[in-house]
Image 1 (spheres, rainbow, N blue to C red):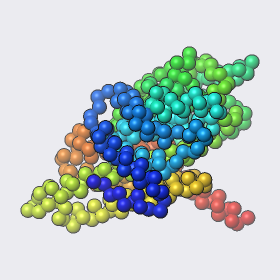
Image 2 (cartoon, protein in one colour; image 1 turned 120 degrees about the vertical axis):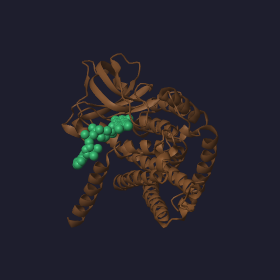
Image 3 (cartoon, helix red, strand yellow; image 1 turned 30 degrees about the vertical axis):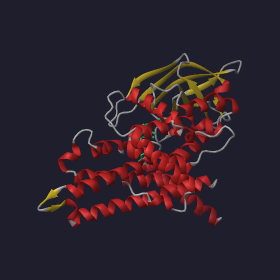
Image 4 (spheres, rainbow, N blue to C red; image 1 turned 30 degrees about the horizontal axis):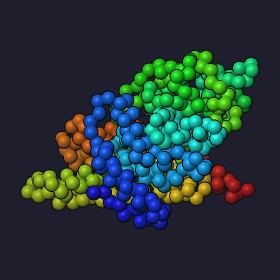
Amino acid sequence: MSDKTYLEWPFFEPRHAVLERELDAWAAQHIAQHHETDVDAACRRLVRQLGDAGWLQHAIAGAAGESIDTRAICLIRETLARHNGLADFAFAMQGLGSGAISLHGTPAQREAYLPRVARGEAIAAFALSEPQAGSDVAAMQCAAVQDQQGGHYVLNGEKTWISNGGIADFYVVFARTGEQPGARGISAFIVDADTPGFEIAERIQVIAPHPLARLVFRDCRVPATQRIGVAGQGFKVAMSTLDLFRTSVAAAALGFARRALDEALAHAMQRKMFGQMLSDFQMTQAKLAQMATGIDAAALLTYRAAWQRDQGRNVTKEAAMAKLTATETAQQVIDAALQMFGGLGVVSEQPVERLYREIRALRIYEGATEVQQLIIARELLRAANTKEQ
Ligand SMILES: Cc1cc2nc3c(=O)[nH]c(=O)nc-3n(C[C@H](O)[C@H](O)[C@H](O)COP(=O)(O)OP(=O)(O)OC[C@H]3O[C@@H](n4cnc5c(N)ncnc54)[C@H](O)[C@@H]3O)c2cc1C
């Protein structure tokens, strides 16, 4: 049983504790971890389950324009990650993939996509990265050129590392429209998966399997009404979407770390050696103490960022601090837990072995650790410069 005392922290309102309790009970009954051989089918099933049970409503903006409750999506991701990493992935991608529509879509775009995303009837994807533009997003080359009549954009280029690539019903694609150089000449588009000229070029296998693909656009015509937000402002659209979901990546890392600590505690208290239990050794106790302290420190940063965003304040620095700390800490916590299991820790599909694989990519995607460090430093220096002037 995981420590739930953090739900009493002042960042939360009573509804958050209720949400966590209900989801925890639902997840234990419906999505307790099991080995998946077909991740595409498993993801489709999980999206449906999450939609049917109403959890995906939290991943989108409300019909009346209510904004996304950051603390709620963080609690949901933390809880799902503790039970089943693929369920967390399915929830997160419905949110990230439709996030630009929630935040910047027209009423018609919101109406056409968000209810289907929330019901689990349409699977969403977020297509920003390219082979030559990962951390350096503004180097993207995928281009969208408006046709003579202005009614369509024609997309040409590639995207890679796209989660849900291959199973998504639509992709929010960022492409260069060239209003200005660099980051100020990018726009965002909704591309339906059946649009002619859109193709899944390659499926990518990773250490913690989930649907992932490289996409190709060849003279792919997209109606201008599918552009999200102002032409040339796509970089801002992408960054505001990431500002929201970056904090939830920290929350998912927390879920993985809490599960690892639970597994380590249970194992240490029943594994006999040298006439005692593993948990009787002070070296084990020091490890457990460090794991629990790291988790609380990461949780404080995560829920500070979530709370601050829900107050309507900018969280660029706080979200970066949360993601950096929670993902790095979770990696250390999971590694320590695996070590306590000895040989059992590396047996395929044991919970700690699975967590060890699942946490790794979180330190890379939605801005690698080094990119988070740059963001934090940039914000610090900007604030210091402003004070000096
Ligand atoms: C499993 C997975 C799922 C993903 N899902 C999506 C998705 O759904 N949509 C999407 O658009 N993208 C997705 N990505 C892409 C992800 O966001 C990129 O992998 C990430 O931004 C890093 O880009 P890159 O892989 O090109 O690495 P690079 O940009 O080549 O960076 C390599 C490494 O260089 C280091 N580095 C970067 N910048 C600096 C710096 N300034 N100083 C020092 N070191 C630095 C970091 O350690 C970094 O990991 C996913 C990636 C993975 C692995």
